[in-house]
Image 1 (spheres, rainbow, N blue to C red):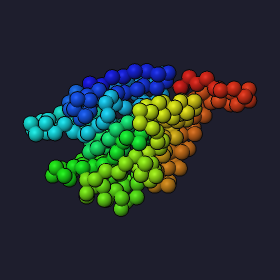
Image 2 (tube, one colour):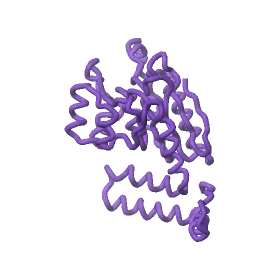
Image 3 (cartoon, rainbow, N blue to C red):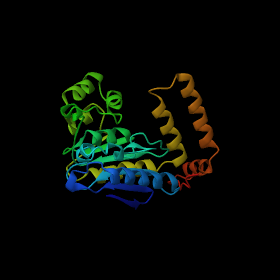
Image 4 (tube, rainbow, N blue to C red):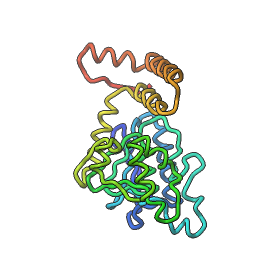
Length: 253
């Protein structure tokens, strides 16, 4: 139910369960975790894209699995729900949503580093409509991504916002026409992979910590990040490419 294809330095991870609106079951959760493992372990893969087949990005948890008393199947030990929302990563992942991302699907998107959405997408946490609580990170990641009052409205009413409004408030990085979300995500990934992978990973680390760490901790992380970049083999290539006025050829080390 999870397909992985490679496009240059980009791993495209596709949820392929359209007959169930790409709802997360055990196979989807373990499949996403395995795909992220591949992304993390392969030195030639620098960015991941999480996308989907069909007209729904992900409708969230498979309620039939929950109703059968097998909710534990929807999470993995390292990744949490969907094998992803709690997964510690070093490489950026972009979500490409060409349809609704609701409930756990919204939480998968919120766990990514960047979101590209077409105007066919919607984002919401409708769990309260089913006497459930969004426990995959959505209730605290959403108010970090959009204004708190709007996040509260989504959490308490269960009603979604459309992609245009999500883009307006900064939840969505790039907005695309229907059918073009993956292409737009690949274009964004190309902009990232044009940069030194070590520097990208170190920069990502500091940005993620900014919401919760102290300034003192963030200064230390920033200094550690520049030290890691300066000690990498790619630092000389970056400087030489600048002097020679050509695109750099990174090794990723």
